[in-house]
Length: 214
Image 1: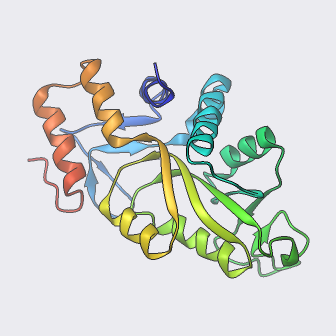
Image 2: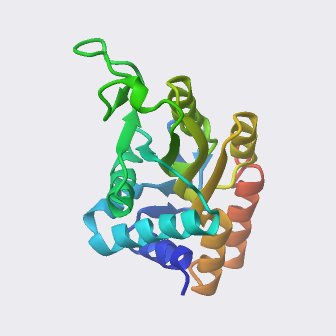
């Protein structure tokens, strides 16, 4: 069994991924969506954390990604980025969503001054990519402060076209261990839902912001 399938099954088991095609969740945006993902639940399970790190390592090897520094998006990408940095024996940093208004007023944590970033290749780790907006905000903070950010890796992606647009516009490639398509194939294989419910999930991914479940 490949790592993506293992992660899908584990996430479903511990309810890090919840699916309710007939009783959608209300996201912070106000949209009604049939899926809710909380990768923070993976932190409780050492074997799940190990799967995730190995998934990132596989992508790095497969795509031949060269990096000098690992960064995590605040806050959900930080623990997984730190675990990956430890495995690779690389420095770890994270950009803040907003600059501190006290102390050293840092915009990026983990460095003593920005010269440590100058010309360095930084690999950004994200937990989930939906539209890609928050990920690209982190990418641009790192770029504006002297580093090169050509890749972003995430645990899971919904596969929205909007994410492709954001990343292409900002000259950054993104790859995910688990994709929504892989999740759906796992659901089908394990008979989690009826054919009608699976059709609802697939229709949602094709047009998530105009999707109607009734």
